[in-house]
Amino acid sequence: MDKFYHIVTYGCQMNVHESEKIAGILSGMGYKSCDDPEKADIVVFNTCCIRENAENHAFGNIGMLKKLKRVRKDMIIAVGGCLPQQMNKAENLHEKFPYVDIIFGTHNLHNLKELIEKKLNSKKTVIEIEDSEGEICEEDRPLRTSYPNAWVNIMYGCNNFCSYCIVPYVRGRERSRQSAKIIEEVKGLVREGYKEITLLGQNVNSYKGDLTFPQLLEEVAKTEGKFRIRFMTSHPKDFSPELIDVMAKYPKICNCLHLPVQSGSDSILKAMNRRYTSGQYLEKVALLKSRIPDCAITTDLIVGFPGETDEDFNVTMDLVKKVNFASAFTFVYSKRQGTKAAEMPDQIPEEVSKSRIMQLVDLVNSQTRALSQTYIGKTVEILCEDYDDKRKLYLGRDEYGRMGYFPSEQNVIGQFVNIKVEHANGVSLTGNIVV
Ligand code: SAH
Ligand code: SF4
Ligand code: F3S
Picture (cartoon, rainbow, N blue to C red):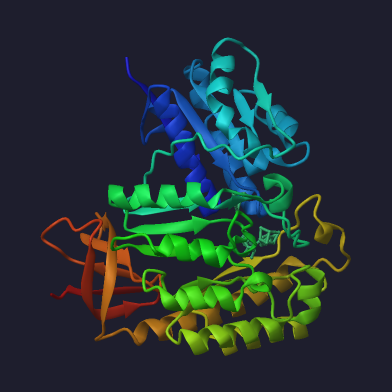
């Protein structure tokens, strides 16, 4: 009889890609994918703990399986990823959800097969949280689910310890893959027909293999074939002129950069341990714009960091106005146990943060909308990624990351198509194919 798995993923691209690795392990064990947890023999939650609401989301969904587990006792529920990797969280999870069968950390993903086998031979909950990151495992064969896009890890972990951030604690120290392995993976993906490769790392600019990151990017860009290259995330302190040179030299590298600024206030940036000033950030943006004038810059912003005054917030608004980001992810600061910022005085009341985030979201949305308007009448090249059943339209993104919808008689998923833009609604464009 067929056995089925269902994976629920929270968090960043890193986790999305790790779920593909989990899928690879499960399919290697003979499980098949299914969309419905009720039919699954194993449900894996690949969790995130970057903000409290990410955790609550996962808790809610794990809680919902309690009833199902009562009727289907032989079903396996596994919880992995960043949430259980936090200090004492695995025990916590076990107490809260005793019916969860397997709890594993970020460094144990490669052993999932053994953990499942262990569980199948035992009644007890299997809890395995490795503290140290260990060697990079090159054995996993991800079962990719996002054709024509493919994610490729270039490094794992983070050494930056931004004072608000849990990632260094749950992902360990930086480890870089060998460039030869990365280039071999990219070449294989291009041969298989993938059209967009995103190089992944918490801070790709601190890649330390046998090459620097700009050198690695250049080698990847030399791969033959028509495909796009993206990379994320870049930390502004390490974003260099050498990287801009490589971006400018190779048309395959999208003119698009995610450069999280977090705040426009120098005292807040200092308290965040970001190690750049708003002036230095603006200088880097100016240099990038002078070399690649059409480069779309996107960012992450946090409001309500401890000690943030109205004045601090206003300078963040000013910076956003100056840079005119193509889009931005905006977050309310969330206190993470174990981080430096959690101990800081002057935690900001919720109503203050809420009012700030609303103002910031309005500003960002108005910039994104204005930029979308400039697309009307223009022709853009879209890499078709999917079909929207509800809207009966195909969709994909241009090199700047803007989403475009269009009708097509043929299935064009995985193809580059030129679209003449007719409408622009906020963040997305609609148009028709032109030849
Ligand atoms: N490594 C990447 C992304 C890290 S997480 C980077 O350095 O940019 C993605 C974003 O989540 C961060 O850029 C930050 O804006 C936000 N974030 C991280 N910790 C947070 C916290 N405790 N509260 C609110 N937002 C947070
Ligand atoms: Fe977190 Fe900073 Fe590392 Fe990004 S660079 S993952 S924000 S500690
Ligand atoms: Fe979340 Fe872990 Fe990514 S905490 S944002 S899934 S690295």
